[in-house]
Length: 504
Image (tube, rainbow, N blue to C red; front, side, top):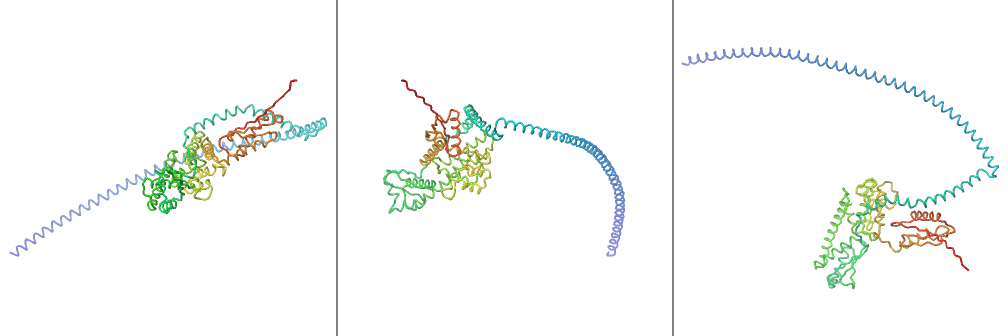
């Protein structure tokens, strides 16, 4: 049985080997066939690639030959143009040489004529000197004196004849611009003061504010830096301080304490801190509102906050924040009328007095403090220059700087905007009268209408009507040069001639 199984297994293995041999033979035949096909395909691809390369080379060669041909043609045309230009230049040079030669001849002729004319003039001059008995210098001096008199008289006549016309024509545009720019600038003005008054519900509140042995009033004065004046004034407490912000903080804190009713040092400290926070927020909000109203963007937060601080600052009775807004509006509208940079004019006008928010806590003028502050927080040089030039500390070298200076004068000089101190007013009146009486032939001068007009009485034998007109103009020019004043000053020259006869 085992032998049969071995025989069957041997037969099976033989059959398997035979089949495997046939498969191997078939695989070898298939591989040989595929190798042959691949070789043929590779040969075909080589031929195609060679043909494609030849065609591409031929195409590039044709394009190169075409480009070379076009370049040669262009070079030929350029050479032709250059040759033509050289010929034209040679012709022009030749013409220039010929013209130069002609000019040299004409110059020689002119020199000869000049010498000839000089001889004639010399002879005529000597003859005139002999006839007149005067030298040429003496005659020239006499002629110049006569000419000077005639010119002065003619100038005075022209000034008198054209004065009304000049005023009308020059003022039309100015009135139009000013009426346009000032029509929206009616702002409320606060009176400058160093004290604030807080009303009390009753006089008993004064004792609570003072506190036991004065501890409440001392705490409030120490925390705010403000003096509280409690006197016999019924139902009122006076706060005194040169810093308007501290005075406002004290006023607000005191009003809160009165409303709350609980007044003791700890409560006072809390209310002062709350008042400081509210004032800080108010200043920032007011500065932001002012910038928004003028359309001024990208101001630094510290600039906005300091700008809002001007709400509590006054100058000659004029609120500085309102004044800055007014200057920004005026400068912007003037810039619009004149075609200048409106954004620069508005921005510079808004922050031109920002130094006044710092001059009570730092050393220096408000202009220098404003310049340093603006430069510190990244303002551009044209804005800084306008701040520096608005009081003529430096010469204004841009249209916008001039417009800010004009707008500042308009805002400060309009009626009711500011109030001068009595000392400044008296000095200005005396200076006006001194300027008017500084000319020969003047009897007296009077400053009237609060310094808005100067009336000058002249000697009628020294000044005629024409000379009086010229005198008024000279005095007005001198006032413009030597005085700083708001608005305008009228100069009136009075020449009176009285003739008296007695009938017998």
